[in-house]
Amino acid sequence: MKFLAAICVLFCALFCGAQTEKPAAAAAGDEKEIGQATNAASGAAQAPAPVSAVLQPTPSSPSSTGATATVSGETNAPPEPVKDPAKCVIARLSFDNNLQPDVGGSTIPVTFKRVSASYLEGVPVTENLPRFIDGRFGKAVLVESAYANLFSIGQADAGEISAFKPVQGATLSISPDQPWQGKEALAVATKGETGEEGFSIETPVEKAFYAKENVSIVPAYYLASLYLKGQGNVKLTLKDVESGAASEPVYIELPANWQRFSCVFDYPFNRINIGANHEADWKNSLPPGTNIAAHLQLVCTTVDSQKLNFFADGFQLEQRNAVPGKNAELAPHSWVTGAFQTTQEQLAIDVKNDYFNSWKKTGSIAFWFKPMWEARDNSNEIILQIAKNQLLLSHDNQKMIFSPAGVSFTPYDWKNNWHHMVVTWNTAGERALYVDGMDYPNAAGEARPIKNPESIMAGDFIRNLSPNGALDELTLYNITLNSEQAKALAAAEPKPGPAQSTESVSAPAAVAAPAALTPAATEQTPPAKKAVQEEKEEE
Image (tube, rainbow, N blue to C red; front, side):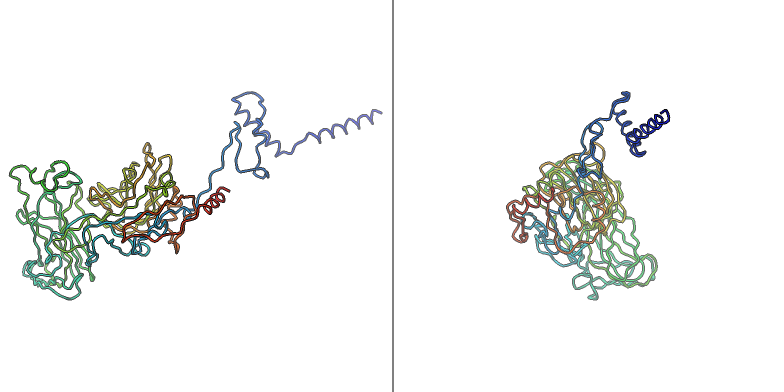
Protein backbone atom coordinates (compact mmCIF):
# COMPACT_ATOMS: atom_id res chain seq x y z
CA MET A 1 0.00 0.00 0.00
CA LYS A 2 2.85 2.40 0.82
CA PHE A 3 4.29 1.58 -2.60
CA LEU A 4 1.00 2.35 -4.32
CA ALA A 5 0.62 5.58 -2.30
CA ALA A 6 4.09 6.73 -3.33
CA ILE A 7 3.27 6.12 -6.98
CA CYS A 8 0.05 8.17 -6.64
CA VAL A 9 1.91 11.06 -5.00
CA LEU A 10 4.53 11.03 -7.78
CA PHE A 11 1.83 10.96 -10.48
CA CYS A 12 -0.02 13.96 -8.91
CA ALA A 13 3.19 15.95 -8.67
CA LEU A 14 4.03 15.35 -12.33
CA PHE A 15 0.45 16.19 -13.40
CA CYS A 16 0.37 19.49 -11.44
CA GLY A 17 3.79 20.52 -12.74
CA ALA A 18 2.67 20.01 -16.33
CA GLN A 19 -0.34 22.33 -15.76
CA THR A 20 1.74 25.22 -14.29
CA GLU A 21 4.97 25.06 -16.31
CA LYS A 22 5.63 27.88 -18.86
CA PRO A 23 7.97 27.94 -21.82
CA ALA A 24 11.24 29.69 -21.15
CA ALA A 25 10.56 32.47 -23.67
CA ALA A 26 7.14 33.18 -22.20
CA ALA A 27 8.56 33.29 -18.70
CA ALA A 28 11.26 35.69 -19.81
CA GLY A 29 8.64 37.87 -21.45
CA ASP A 30 6.58 37.93 -18.26
CA GLU A 31 9.64 38.91 -16.24
CA LYS A 32 10.36 41.82 -18.66
CA GLU A 33 6.75 42.99 -18.61
CA ILE A 34 6.60 42.85 -14.81
CA GLY A 35 9.84 44.77 -14.60
CA GLN A 36 8.39 47.53 -16.81
CA ALA A 37 5.25 47.67 -14.72
CA THR A 38 7.35 47.93 -11.56
CA ASN A 39 9.24 50.91 -12.97
CA ALA A 40 5.98 52.55 -13.99
CA ALA A 41 4.68 52.19 -10.42
CA SER A 42 7.62 54.30 -9.15
CA GLY A 43 9.15 51.59 -6.98
CA ALA A 44 5.97 49.93 -5.64
CA ALA A 45 6.99 46.42 -4.62
CA GLN A 46 5.59 43.53 -6.61
CA ALA A 47 3.06 45.75 -8.49
CA PRO A 48 0.98 43.83 -10.99
CA ALA A 49 1.24 44.61 -14.70
CA PRO A 50 -1.35 47.22 -15.80
CA VAL A 51 -4.30 46.04 -17.81
CA SER A 52 -3.32 48.14 -20.80
CA ALA A 53 0.02 46.36 -20.96
CA VAL A 54 -1.55 42.95 -20.65
CA LEU A 55 -4.05 43.70 -23.40
CA GLN A 56 -1.48 45.24 -25.74
CA PRO A 57 -1.80 43.50 -29.13
CA THR A 58 1.28 41.96 -30.66
CA PRO A 59 2.34 42.75 -34.20
CA SER A 60 1.04 39.37 -35.29
CA SER A 61 -2.36 39.87 -33.67
CA PRO A 62 -5.21 40.08 -36.22
CA SER A 63 -6.74 42.93 -34.22
CA SER A 64 -3.63 45.12 -34.39
CA THR A 65 -4.26 48.51 -36.07
CA GLY A 66 -0.73 49.91 -35.98
CA ALA A 67 -1.37 51.90 -32.78
CA THR A 68 0.61 50.99 -29.68
CA ALA A 69 -0.50 51.12 -26.04
CA THR A 70 2.03 52.37 -23.50
CA VAL A 71 2.48 51.21 -19.91
CA SER A 72 0.76 54.38 -18.66
CA GLY A 73 -2.32 53.54 -20.71
CA GLU A 74 -1.79 56.20 -23.44
CA THR A 75 -2.11 55.26 -27.09
CA ASN A 76 0.50 56.46 -29.60
CA ALA A 77 -0.86 57.00 -33.13
CA PRO A 78 1.18 55.45 -35.93
CA PRO A 79 3.34 57.87 -37.94
CA GLU A 80 1.68 59.27 -41.04
CA PRO A 81 2.96 57.75 -44.27
CA VAL A 82 5.31 59.94 -46.29
CA LYS A 83 3.39 61.49 -49.17
CA ASP A 84 4.56 61.23 -52.76
CA PRO A 85 5.67 64.74 -53.83
CA ALA A 86 4.52 64.08 -57.40
CA LYS A 87 0.95 63.80 -56.10
CA CYS A 88 1.21 67.02 -54.09
CA VAL A 89 2.06 69.48 -56.86
CA ILE A 90 -0.45 72.33 -56.94
CA ALA A 91 1.43 74.57 -59.41
CA ARG A 92 4.37 74.24 -61.77
CA LEU A 93 5.89 76.70 -64.23
CA SER A 94 8.37 75.16 -66.66
CA PHE A 95 9.07 78.47 -68.48
CA ASP A 96 9.37 76.70 -71.83
CA ASN A 97 9.03 79.88 -73.91
CA ASN A 98 5.89 80.93 -71.98
CA LEU A 99 4.62 81.63 -68.47
CA GLN A 100 1.64 79.28 -68.61
CA PRO A 101 1.59 76.90 -65.64
CA ASP A 102 1.83 73.19 -66.48
CA VAL A 103 -0.18 72.43 -63.34
CA GLY A 104 -2.93 74.73 -62.06
CA GLY A 105 -3.77 76.36 -65.38
CA SER A 106 -5.86 79.50 -65.27
CA THR A 107 -6.25 79.18 -61.48
CA ILE A 108 -2.64 80.37 -61.13
CA PRO A 109 -2.44 84.15 -61.76
CA VAL A 110 1.06 84.79 -63.13
CA THR A 111 2.17 88.30 -64.05
CA PHE A 112 5.29 89.65 -65.74
CA LYS A 113 6.20 93.28 -66.33
CA ARG A 114 9.12 95.20 -67.81
CA VAL A 115 7.99 98.59 -69.03
CA SER A 116 11.07 99.07 -71.24
CA ALA A 117 12.51 97.05 -74.09
CA SER A 118 15.58 94.93 -73.44
CA TYR A 119 18.12 92.73 -75.25
CA LEU A 120 18.96 89.05 -75.32
CA GLU A 121 22.34 88.08 -76.79
CA GLY A 122 22.36 91.37 -78.67
CA VAL A 123 18.83 90.97 -80.07
CA PRO A 124 16.14 93.50 -79.03
CA VAL A 125 13.17 92.21 -76.99
CA THR A 126 9.87 94.14 -76.88
CA GLU A 127 8.66 95.68 -73.63
CA ASN A 128 6.68 93.45 -71.25
CA LEU A 129 7.85 90.29 -73.00
CA PRO A 130 9.90 87.87 -70.88
CA ARG A 131 13.31 86.69 -72.04
CA PHE A 132 13.83 82.94 -72.24
CA ILE A 133 17.25 81.28 -72.32
CA ASP A 134 18.46 77.66 -72.25
CA GLY A 135 17.26 76.18 -68.97
CA ARG A 136 18.11 73.22 -66.80
CA PHE A 137 15.35 71.40 -68.65
CA GLY A 138 14.07 73.05 -71.83
CA LYS A 139 13.93 76.82 -71.40
CA ALA A 140 14.19 79.15 -68.39
CA VAL A 141 13.12 82.74 -67.72
CA LEU A 142 15.72 85.45 -67.12
CA VAL A 143 14.89 88.06 -64.45
CA GLU A 144 17.12 91.12 -63.89
CA SER A 145 17.03 94.43 -62.05
CA ALA A 146 17.02 97.84 -63.74
CA TYR A 147 20.34 99.12 -65.13
CA ALA A 148 21.82 101.24 -67.91
CA ASN A 149 24.73 101.08 -70.37
CA LEU A 150 26.65 104.34 -69.96
CA PHE A 151 28.74 103.89 -73.09
CA SER A 152 27.48 105.55 -76.27
CA ILE A 153 25.80 103.55 -79.02
CA GLY A 154 28.94 103.74 -81.16
CA GLN A 155 31.06 102.45 -78.27
CA ALA A 156 28.67 99.72 -77.10
CA ASP A 157 28.04 98.34 -80.61
CA ALA A 158 31.66 98.81 -81.78
CA GLY A 159 30.19 100.63 -84.74
CA GLU A 160 32.22 103.90 -84.78
CA ILE A 161 36.00 103.85 -85.03
CA SER A 162 36.14 107.43 -83.66
CA ALA A 163 34.75 106.12 -80.36
CA PHE A 164 38.01 104.22 -79.70
CA LYS A 165 41.56 105.47 -79.19
CA PRO A 166 44.66 103.42 -80.09
CA VAL A 167 47.22 102.85 -77.31
CA GLN A 168 50.95 102.72 -78.09
CA GLY A 169 50.53 102.67 -81.86
CA ALA A 170 48.04 99.78 -82.16
CA THR A 171 45.96 99.68 -85.36
CA LEU A 172 42.18 99.82 -84.89
CA SER A 173 39.48 99.10 -87.44
CA ILE A 174 35.78 98.20 -87.62
CA SER A 175 35.51 94.69 -89.04
CA PRO A 176 32.47 92.80 -90.34
CA ASP A 177 34.22 89.48 -89.62
CA GLN A 178 32.35 87.39 -87.03
CA PRO A 179 30.88 90.11 -84.78
CA TRP A 180 29.52 89.03 -81.41
CA GLN A 181 26.31 90.93 -82.17
CA GLY A 182 25.14 93.24 -84.91
CA LYS A 183 27.20 93.56 -88.06
CA GLU A 184 30.61 94.74 -86.86
CA ALA A 185 33.28 94.33 -84.22
CA LEU A 186 36.41 96.24 -83.23
CA ALA A 187 39.55 94.68 -84.74
CA VAL A 188 42.84 95.36 -82.92
CA ALA A 189 46.33 94.73 -84.34
CA THR A 190 49.41 95.30 -82.18
CA LYS A 191 52.94 95.56 -83.58
CA GLY A 192 54.68 94.04 -80.57
CA GLU A 193 57.24 96.84 -80.52
CA THR A 194 56.36 98.17 -77.06
CA GLY A 195 54.47 96.87 -74.10
CA GLU A 196 50.83 97.63 -73.37
CA GLU A 197 49.56 98.16 -76.91
CA GLY A 198 45.81 98.14 -77.51
CA PHE A 199 42.86 100.54 -77.24
CA SER A 200 40.81 102.63 -74.83
CA ILE A 201 37.35 104.14 -74.63
CA GLU A 202 36.29 107.02 -72.42
CA THR A 203 32.99 108.35 -71.03
CA PRO A 204 31.85 110.95 -68.47
CA VAL A 205 30.66 109.59 -65.11
CA GLU A 206 29.83 110.75 -61.58
CA LYS A 207 31.59 109.74 -58.40
CA ALA A 208 28.37 109.28 -56.42
CA PHE A 209 24.67 108.72 -57.01
CA TYR A 210 21.37 108.39 -55.15
CA ALA A 211 20.45 104.78 -54.32
CA LYS A 212 16.77 104.50 -53.47
CA GLU A 213 17.26 101.08 -51.85
CA ASN A 214 19.57 102.79 -49.32
CA VAL A 215 17.76 106.19 -49.34
CA SER A 216 21.28 107.63 -49.46
CA ILE A 217 23.88 109.22 -51.70
CA VAL A 218 26.44 106.45 -52.07
CA PRO A 219 29.88 106.05 -53.70
CA ALA A 220 29.67 104.90 -57.31
CA TYR A 221 31.08 101.58 -58.39
CA TYR A 222 31.59 101.17 -62.14
CA LEU A 223 31.57 97.79 -63.84
CA ALA A 224 32.92 97.60 -67.39
CA SER A 225 32.42 94.50 -69.52
CA LEU A 226 33.16 93.44 -73.08
CA TYR A 227 33.40 90.38 -75.30
CA LEU A 228 36.82 89.32 -76.57
CA LYS A 229 38.30 86.67 -78.83
CA GLY A 230 41.71 86.05 -80.41
CA GLN A 231 45.09 84.67 -79.40
CA GLY A 232 47.61 85.93 -76.86
CA ASN A 233 47.33 87.73 -73.54
CA VAL A 234 45.81 91.10 -72.64
CA LYS A 235 44.77 92.98 -69.52
CA LEU A 236 41.80 95.18 -68.63
CA THR A 237 41.80 98.23 -66.35
CA LEU A 238 39.40 101.05 -65.53
CA LYS A 239 41.13 104.38 -64.98
CA ASP A 240 40.00 107.77 -63.67
CA VAL A 241 41.30 110.24 -66.25
CA GLU A 242 41.71 113.23 -63.90
CA SER A 243 43.46 111.51 -60.99
CA GLY A 244 45.13 108.63 -62.79
CA ALA A 245 43.78 106.16 -60.21
CA ALA A 246 43.16 102.74 -61.74
CA SER A 247 41.50 99.46 -60.85
CA GLU A 248 43.36 96.24 -60.27
CA PRO A 249 44.18 94.81 -63.73
CA VAL A 250 42.34 91.74 -64.96
CA TYR A 251 44.65 89.44 -66.92
CA ILE A 252 43.10 87.50 -69.79
CA GLU A 253 44.22 84.67 -72.03
CA LEU A 254 42.25 85.41 -75.16
CA PRO A 255 39.78 82.66 -76.11
CA ALA A 256 39.20 81.35 -79.63
CA ASN A 257 35.46 82.08 -79.30
CA TRP A 258 33.63 85.10 -77.92
CA GLN A 259 33.77 85.30 -74.14
CA ARG A 260 32.80 88.07 -71.72
CA PHE A 261 35.24 89.72 -69.30
CA SER A 262 34.86 92.57 -66.80
CA CYS A 263 36.64 94.84 -64.32
CA VAL A 264 35.52 97.19 -61.51
CA PHE A 265 36.50 100.68 -60.34
CA ASP A 266 35.09 102.47 -57.27
CA TYR A 267 35.26 106.13 -56.31
CA PRO A 268 35.90 107.15 -52.68
CA PHE A 269 32.92 109.03 -51.28
CA ASN A 270 31.34 109.31 -47.84
CA ARG A 271 27.77 108.06 -47.83
CA ILE A 272 25.06 110.64 -47.02
CA ASN A 273 21.65 109.52 -45.79
CA ILE A 274 18.99 111.91 -47.16
CA GLY A 275 15.79 109.84 -46.90
CA ALA A 276 13.38 108.49 -49.49
CA ASN A 277 12.03 110.03 -52.70
CA HIS A 278 15.02 112.12 -53.72
CA GLU A 279 15.66 110.63 -57.15
CA ALA A 280 15.22 114.03 -58.84
CA ASP A 281 16.82 116.45 -56.37
CA TRP A 282 19.52 114.46 -54.54
CA LYS A 283 22.36 116.69 -55.79
CA ASN A 284 20.92 119.55 -53.73
CA SER A 285 21.92 117.54 -50.62
CA LEU A 286 25.62 117.43 -51.54
CA PRO A 287 27.96 119.46 -49.30
CA PRO A 288 28.84 122.87 -50.78
CA GLY A 289 31.75 122.76 -53.20
CA THR A 290 31.47 118.99 -53.82
CA ASN A 291 32.46 118.04 -57.36
CA ILE A 292 31.32 114.59 -58.43
CA ALA A 293 32.01 114.96 -62.18
CA ALA A 294 34.67 112.63 -63.59
CA HIS A 295 35.81 110.77 -66.71
CA LEU A 296 36.41 107.04 -66.73
CA GLN A 297 38.52 105.15 -69.25
CA LEU A 298 38.44 101.45 -70.12
CA VAL A 299 41.86 100.30 -71.30
CA CYS A 300 42.61 96.94 -72.99
CA THR A 301 46.29 96.34 -73.79
CA THR A 302 48.81 93.56 -74.28
CA VAL A 303 50.60 92.24 -71.21
CA ASP A 304 54.03 92.59 -72.79
CA SER A 305 55.50 93.12 -76.25
CA GLN A 306 53.25 90.85 -78.29
CA LYS A 307 52.23 91.04 -81.93
CA LEU A 308 48.53 90.25 -81.72
CA ASN A 309 45.31 90.36 -83.70
CA PHE A 310 42.15 90.20 -81.63
CA PHE A 311 38.52 91.36 -81.66
CA ALA A 312 36.30 93.19 -79.15
CA ASP A 313 32.53 93.78 -79.11
CA GLY A 314 29.52 94.22 -76.81
CA PHE A 315 30.90 96.98 -74.57
CA GLN A 316 28.98 97.95 -71.44
CA LEU A 317 29.57 100.28 -68.48
CA GLU A 318 27.23 100.05 -65.48
CA GLN A 319 26.94 102.22 -62.40
CA ARG A 320 26.48 99.94 -59.40
CA ASN A 321 25.79 100.13 -55.69
CA ALA A 322 28.09 98.06 -53.47
CA VAL A 323 29.35 97.93 -49.89
CA PRO A 324 32.53 100.03 -49.46
CA GLY A 325 35.50 98.19 -48.02
CA LYS A 326 34.29 94.81 -49.24
CA ASN A 327 35.53 92.69 -52.11
CA ALA A 328 35.01 94.80 -55.26
CA GLU A 329 33.98 91.85 -57.42
CA LEU A 330 30.73 92.39 -59.33
CA ALA A 331 29.08 90.57 -62.22
CA PRO A 332 27.63 92.38 -65.25
CA HIS A 333 24.01 92.33 -66.32
CA SER A 334 22.99 91.21 -69.79
CA TRP A 335 24.29 93.46 -72.55
CA VAL A 336 22.08 96.28 -73.82
CA THR A 337 22.92 98.85 -76.45
CA GLY A 338 24.63 102.11 -75.54
CA ALA A 339 22.93 105.07 -73.84
CA PHE A 340 20.06 102.76 -72.93
CA GLN A 341 18.17 102.25 -69.67
CA THR A 342 16.24 99.03 -69.06
CA THR A 343 13.73 98.70 -66.23
CA GLN A 344 13.34 95.97 -63.62
CA GLU A 345 11.72 92.70 -64.67
CA GLN A 346 8.90 91.76 -62.30
CA LEU A 347 7.69 88.15 -62.10
CA ALA A 348 4.98 87.32 -59.54
CA ILE A 349 2.43 84.61 -58.67
CA ASP A 350 -0.68 85.72 -56.78
CA VAL A 351 -1.44 83.28 -53.92
CA LYS A 352 -4.23 85.11 -52.09
CA ASN A 353 -7.09 82.92 -53.36
CA ASP A 354 -8.39 79.77 -51.65
CA TYR A 355 -6.65 77.42 -54.08
CA PHE A 356 -3.48 77.86 -51.99
CA ASN A 357 -5.03 77.40 -48.52
CA SER A 358 -3.39 74.08 -47.67
CA TRP A 359 -0.08 75.24 -49.20
CA LYS A 360 -0.04 78.30 -46.95
CA LYS A 361 -0.03 76.07 -43.84
CA THR A 362 2.43 73.36 -44.89
CA GLY A 363 4.14 73.89 -48.18
CA SER A 364 7.28 73.98 -50.29
CA ILE A 365 8.66 75.82 -53.29
CA ALA A 366 11.24 74.08 -55.46
CA PHE A 367 13.04 75.50 -58.49
CA TRP A 368 16.27 75.55 -60.46
CA PHE A 369 18.34 78.74 -60.40
CA LYS A 370 21.32 79.88 -62.50
CA PRO A 371 22.89 83.05 -61.04
CA MET A 372 24.80 85.55 -63.16
CA TRP A 373 26.86 86.47 -60.09
CA GLU A 374 29.29 84.78 -57.74
CA ALA A 375 28.29 84.16 -54.12
CA ARG A 376 31.29 86.21 -52.95
CA ASP A 377 30.42 89.18 -55.15
CA ASN A 378 29.80 92.55 -53.52
CA SER A 379 26.22 92.79 -54.77
CA ASN A 380 22.69 92.44 -53.42
CA GLU A 381 20.04 90.20 -55.00
CA ILE A 382 16.66 88.87 -53.94
CA ILE A 383 16.06 85.49 -55.53
CA LEU A 384 12.60 84.73 -54.18
CA GLN A 385 10.23 86.02 -51.53
CA ILE A 386 6.76 85.31 -50.20
CA ALA A 387 5.21 88.74 -49.70
CA LYS A 388 4.63 90.54 -47.57
CA ASN A 389 7.56 89.86 -45.26
CA GLN A 390 6.80 86.15 -44.93
CA LEU A 391 9.90 84.49 -46.38
CA LEU A 392 13.00 85.80 -48.13
CA LEU A 393 15.84 84.10 -50.03
CA SER A 394 18.51 86.66 -50.85
CA HIS A 395 22.18 87.38 -51.50
CA ASP A 396 23.71 90.16 -49.42
CA ASN A 397 27.03 90.94 -47.75
CA GLN A 398 28.67 88.14 -49.77
CA LYS A 399 26.38 85.49 -48.29
CA MET A 400 23.22 83.60 -49.15
CA ILE A 401 20.55 84.50 -46.58
CA PHE A 402 17.33 82.61 -45.77
CA SER A 403 15.07 84.66 -43.49
CA PRO A 404 13.34 84.88 -41.14
CA ALA A 405 15.13 81.63 -40.34
CA GLY A 406 18.58 82.71 -39.15
CA VAL A 407 20.37 80.95 -42.03
CA SER A 408 23.38 82.39 -43.89
CA PHE A 409 26.20 80.71 -45.82
CA THR A 410 28.50 81.17 -48.82
CA PRO A 411 28.35 78.38 -51.44
CA TYR A 412 31.04 77.49 -53.96
CA ASP A 413 30.83 77.01 -57.75
CA TRP A 414 27.88 79.36 -57.84
CA LYS A 415 28.07 81.68 -60.87
CA ASN A 416 26.65 80.46 -64.20
CA ASN A 417 25.85 77.01 -62.78
CA TRP A 418 22.42 75.48 -62.25
CA HIS A 419 21.47 74.92 -58.61
CA HIS A 420 18.38 73.21 -57.22
CA MET A 421 16.70 75.13 -54.41
CA VAL A 422 13.84 74.20 -52.07
CA VAL A 423 12.24 76.26 -49.29
CA THR A 424 9.80 74.59 -46.90
CA TRP A 425 7.61 75.48 -43.91
CA ASN A 426 4.98 73.90 -41.66
CA THR A 427 2.24 74.94 -39.23
CA ALA A 428 4.73 75.06 -36.35
CA GLY A 429 6.70 77.75 -38.19
CA GLU A 430 9.67 75.50 -38.82
CA ARG A 431 11.47 76.35 -42.07
CA ALA A 432 14.23 74.76 -44.08
CA LEU A 433 16.29 75.63 -47.14
CA TYR A 434 17.81 72.96 -49.38
CA VAL A 435 20.49 73.86 -51.93
CA ASP A 436 21.51 71.04 -54.25
CA GLY A 437 20.17 68.61 -51.64
CA MET A 438 22.09 70.13 -48.70
CA ASP A 439 19.79 71.18 -45.87
CA TYR A 440 19.90 74.45 -43.93
CA PRO A 441 17.15 74.35 -41.24
CA ASN A 442 16.06 77.42 -39.32
CA ALA A 443 18.10 78.38 -36.28
CA ALA A 444 16.76 77.93 -32.76
CA GLY A 445 14.12 80.50 -31.88
CA GLU A 446 13.52 81.47 -35.51
CA ALA A 447 10.32 79.47 -36.12
CA ARG A 448 7.52 81.56 -37.63
CA PRO A 449 4.41 80.29 -39.45
CA ILE A 450 3.42 81.69 -42.84
CA LYS A 451 0.51 84.12 -42.32
CA ASN A 452 -1.68 85.63 -45.03
CA PRO A 453 0.81 85.52 -47.92
CA GLU A 454 -0.07 87.65 -50.92
CA SER A 455 2.32 86.61 -53.67
CA ILE A 456 5.50 84.82 -54.64
CA MET A 457 7.87 87.38 -56.12
CA ALA A 458 11.16 86.95 -57.98
CA GLY A 459 12.76 90.02 -56.38
CA ASP A 460 11.71 93.16 -54.56
CA PHE A 461 9.83 95.52 -56.86
CA ILE A 462 10.18 98.57 -54.62
CA ARG A 463 13.93 98.42 -54.03
CA ASN A 464 14.89 97.27 -57.57
CA LEU A 465 16.40 94.01 -56.30
CA SER A 466 16.04 90.96 -58.55
CA PRO A 467 17.44 87.43 -58.85
CA ASN A 468 19.76 88.54 -61.69
CA GLY A 469 19.69 85.03 -63.03
CA ALA A 470 17.46 82.41 -64.63
CA LEU A 471 14.62 80.42 -63.03
CA ASP A 472 13.42 77.03 -64.24
CA GLU A 473 10.84 74.42 -63.17
CA LEU A 474 9.28 76.52 -60.40
CA THR A 475 7.05 74.07 -58.49
CA LEU A 476 4.71 74.49 -55.51
CA TYR A 477 3.91 71.54 -53.20
CA ASN A 478 1.22 71.49 -50.52
CA ILE A 479 3.43 69.37 -48.26
CA THR A 480 6.60 70.10 -46.35
CA LEU A 481 9.26 68.26 -48.33
CA ASN A 482 11.79 66.41 -46.21
CA SER A 483 15.53 66.06 -46.72
CA GLU A 484 15.37 62.86 -48.75
CA GLN A 485 12.67 64.26 -51.02
CA ALA A 486 14.69 67.43 -51.62
CA LYS A 487 17.76 65.37 -52.49
CA ALA A 488 15.75 63.24 -54.89
CA LEU A 489 14.37 66.33 -56.65
CA ALA A 490 17.86 67.77 -57.00
CA ALA A 491 19.15 64.54 -58.54
CA ALA A 492 16.17 63.34 -60.59
CA GLU A 493 15.40 64.01 -64.23
CA PRO A 494 11.96 65.55 -64.86
CA LYS A 495 9.19 63.18 -65.89
CA PRO A 496 7.60 63.82 -69.29
CA GLY A 497 4.24 65.56 -69.13
CA PRO A 498 2.58 67.41 -66.26
CA ALA A 499 1.60 65.54 -63.12
CA GLN A 500 -1.72 66.88 -61.84
CA SER A 501 -2.13 66.95 -58.09
CA THR A 502 -4.42 64.39 -56.49
CA GLU A 503 -4.26 65.96 -53.03
CA SER A 504 -7.33 67.56 -51.51
CA VAL A 505 -7.22 71.12 -52.85
CA SER A 506 -10.24 73.34 -53.42
CA ALA A 507 -10.08 74.96 -56.85
CA PRO A 508 -11.11 78.62 -56.92
CA ALA A 509 -12.81 80.48 -59.67
CA ALA A 510 -10.51 81.31 -62.58
CA VAL A 511 -8.50 84.51 -62.14
CA ALA A 512 -7.78 86.61 -65.19
CA ALA A 513 -4.11 87.03 -66.13
CA PRO A 514 -2.67 89.65 -68.50
CA ALA A 515 -3.88 89.16 -72.06
CA ALA A 516 -0.49 88.25 -73.45
CA LEU A 517 0.13 85.78 -70.64
CA THR A 518 -3.29 84.16 -70.18
CA PRO A 519 -2.46 80.55 -69.22
CA ALA A 520 -4.26 77.65 -70.82
CA ALA A 521 -6.99 76.18 -68.68
CA THR A 522 -6.12 72.96 -66.91
CA GLU A 523 -8.87 70.46 -66.13
CA GLN A 524 -9.79 70.57 -62.46
CA THR A 525 -11.03 67.53 -60.55
CA PRO A 526 -14.85 67.80 -60.07
CA PRO A 527 -15.92 68.03 -56.41
CA ALA A 528 -17.55 64.57 -56.42
CA LYS A 529 -14.44 62.88 -57.78
CA LYS A 530 -12.24 64.84 -55.39
CA ALA A 531 -14.28 63.65 -52.40
CA VAL A 532 -13.83 60.04 -53.52
CA GLN A 533 -10.11 60.61 -53.80
CA GLU A 534 -9.97 62.03 -50.28
CA GLU A 535 -11.78 58.99 -48.88
CA LYS A 536 -9.40 56.64 -50.64
CA GLU A 537 -6.40 58.51 -49.28
CA GLU A 538 -7.79 58.38 -45.75
CA GLU A 539 -8.32 54.66 -46.11
